[in-house]
Image (cartoon, rainbow, N blue to C red; front, side, top):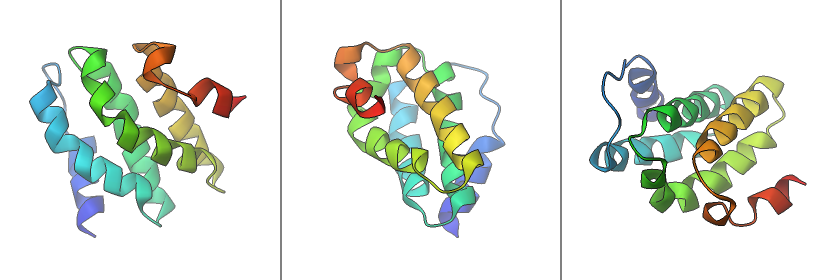
Length: 113
């Protein structure tokens, strides 16, 4: 599984500098595929990367163009039958939303309630 290999490589990467928009453009496609994977361990890895990536972006607003890809998939992982996957997705969602406004996350608060 190439997606799992790519996610494992990302998880093993130590980011020494802030993640810039160009780097995000490279990271998002495999993360998105990972969040949609049937294998719960792959979904969990992808969610963990979203959470980690969120704390390393130079400007939280740089993630906004990718929210339409990430949020629906994170919501689905929040409904996963495996508690550890749900926990990882919840942490990722918290990290992702920490630097953004409610306007950047339309409907998320309503969906969570």
